[in-house]
Amino acid sequence: MGTTQHSFKPAEINPLNSLDEWEDAVLQRYPEPDSIAKEKTADQFRNYDTPERDTVREFYRLNHTYQTYDFVQEKRANYLKFDKKEMPIWEAFNFLNQLVDDSDPDTDLDQFQHLLQTSEAIRADGHPDWMVLVGLMHDMGKVLCLFGEPQWAVVGDTFPVGCAYSDKVVYPEYFQNNPDSKDPRFQSPTGVYKQGCGLRNVDMSWGHDEYVYQMMKDYLPEQGLYMLRYHSFYAWHREGAYSELLDDHDRDMLRWVKLFNPYDLYSKCPEPPDWKKLRPYYEDLVAKYLPATLKF
Ligand SMILES: [Fe+2]
Ligand SMILES: [Fe+2]
Image 1 (cartoon, rainbow, N blue to C red):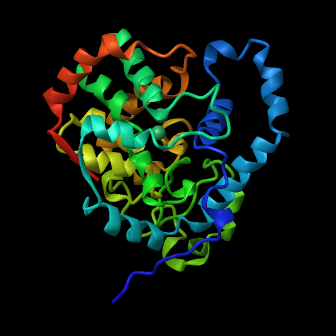
Image 2: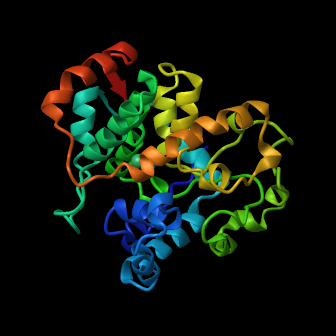
Image 3: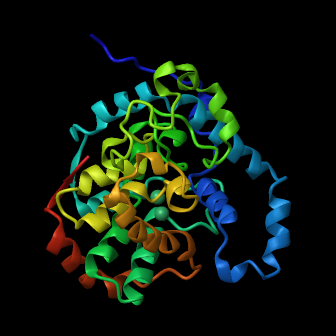
């Protein structure tokens, strides 16, 4: 028996100029509450007609077309073996940083800077240290790109596979192209799952959230694991969709996922934190919770 290996045309692998384009589009969809009133808004509306907008649209078209139930099973079987690489955590950040943004080297921060700004914003607000660590680790799963995964199998809003799509997922019209939309097993709101089964029993579209959750699942408290696993599940934590699949535990954990989201979206600042000064704190934090090496 063999698993289906998909092959994609070059144009279908990396439709975005950089992974940041997806995150910038999410930020436009959910602008920081304080900034809504400011003059920014006019520009943001105009941005819907820019070429970047089209790359994001194309990105979602590919994501919604190819993220099938079978595709997810194939990726889980491959990556959740964690047999690709093993490295100390600080080396892993260097590895992640190979994901450089060629399109806009002056304005965009590298991956590690985004992680550090997220974790520093969490720390500044006095949250528990494990949540600071969540901030530092939450996008580590983007190394999937360096293992050759297309952008749309690494980033993008996540959604359950194996059941009907919610129209609360961004660009829902592109789900028509997904063969699962014609599979009789997947047509009801619960699909292959049981009503109220809990998200832990639901397979999500494949991406950096699930991968980093699985990497960290033995080392962080449950609240932190929810933040990692569902931080890109906007249809749930921002739009309230997929209630048929939730159990009491999910409903209880939702506030933690919501607590994390603003730090991910709104902590970008042009001035990078002073890593030399911060390093001892983070070395202790990592040593407190994580093993000496991480498996990928
Ligand atoms: Fe992320
Ligand atoms: Fe992030």
